Length: 93
Length: 231
Image (tube, rainbow over all chains, first blue to last red; front, side):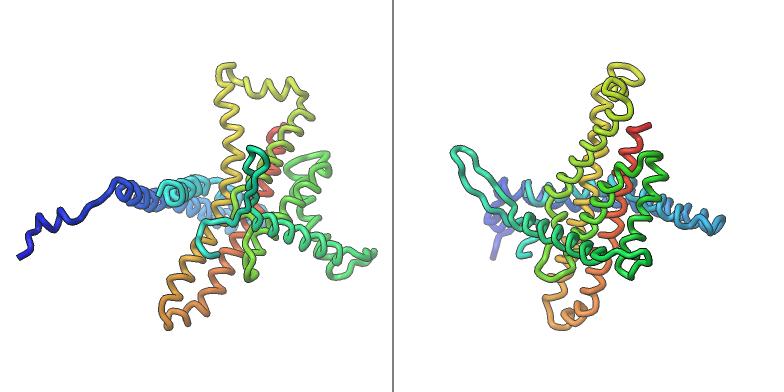
C-alpha cells in the first residue's frame, strides 16, 4: 500500500524549477492578455476605414495607408507584451 | 534554424575585450545589400526616355515615395528621399529573404532593427537642428514647463524604441509561429501532408504579407518622425 504522503515526499521541486515554471506561465499570460487590446483596437481602425471607403471610394488609397500606420502604432502594446514574453522565456527561464 | 531564438555568434578575445559577432546576421545583411544593388543595377542599366519594363517598376517605386514624402515632408523633401527609399528597400528585402530556404531574416536579430532605428534617430535630430536651429531644437524639450524635460526626452526616445521593437517583434514572432507550426506538423506522417499545403501559406502570410506591411510602416513612421521635428 502506497501512502500518498510518502509519494509527495518523493517529489522534490527545487527553486530553479519553480522560477522556470513561473516564468513560462508568466510569458503565456503576458502574451494572452496583451493580445486583447491590439486586437480590439485594430478592429476598430479597420471598421472605421471600411466606413470611410464606403463613403468616399476615391480616397481608398489614402485611407488604407493611414489605417495601416494607425494599426501599426496601436499594435505596439501587443509587441511590448511579446518582447516581455520573449524575455521571460529566453532570459529568465 | 535549430533552436528558436538562438543566433549564431563568433567571439574572440583581444586583450581584455571579448568581441562577439553575430556572423549569421552579418552574412545575411551583406547578401541583402548585394541583392538590392545587383537588382537595381540590372533594372536601371540602360535607362531610356521610353522606359523598359524593369525601369518602369523602379520609376513607380520612386514616384510613389516621392509623392508620400512631398505630402508629409513638404518642401525640400528630395533631401530625405534617398534615405527613405533605402530604408524601405533594405527592410523589405530583409523581411522577404526569409522565405528563401536556408536563409534567415536579418531583422530577426534585434541588432539590425536597432541599427536602422538609431540611424533614423540621428537623422531626426539632424533635421530638427537644421530647421529650428540648435536652441530651437533644445527649447522643444522644455516646452510647456521646464521640469517636464526628462519626460520629453523619455517620450522622444520611447518613440524610437517602439519603432525598433515593432519591426523586430513582428518578424521574430512570425518566424516563431512558422517554426512552431512546422515542428508540430512534422510529428506524424499525416500532419506532414497538411504541412505541404499549410507551409507555403504560413510563409506567404508571415514572410511576404507581414514583411511588406512592416517595411512600409517602418518607412512611413520614420518619415512622420522626421516631419514632426521639422514643424
